[in-house]
Length: 144
Image (cartoon, rainbow, N blue to C red; front, top):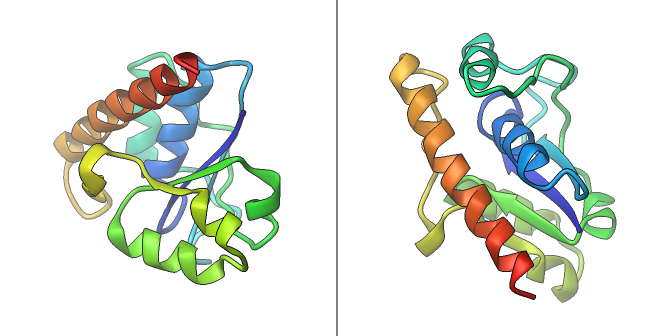
């Protein structure tokens, strides 16, 4: 299974989802990307790295990248963090098959809030939401 997680800048939510899912499903191919080019080549936000470390996840080697149209062919699923990401990712899709790969990270198409402009509590909350989301995704694949 090949999954890419997508948020705006690829420095907070999507790298955390990548790190969590790599722990849960080490045999899957997991990556993350952003819809924007704001942070290409940068490490994840230091607050997200710190939050991840508290849960035994190492994000320090990750570097932000922007989602490309090639990702639709390379990945089975593209999980987005919020409605804006969903719109932006769908705008890159070239076919109905590409569009069918795009899913929301959380149930009921709820947004994973962007913790970038908040405090430490926001990063902890995002970790918990992403952990639940990754476990749900993993469980769904195991039932197949």
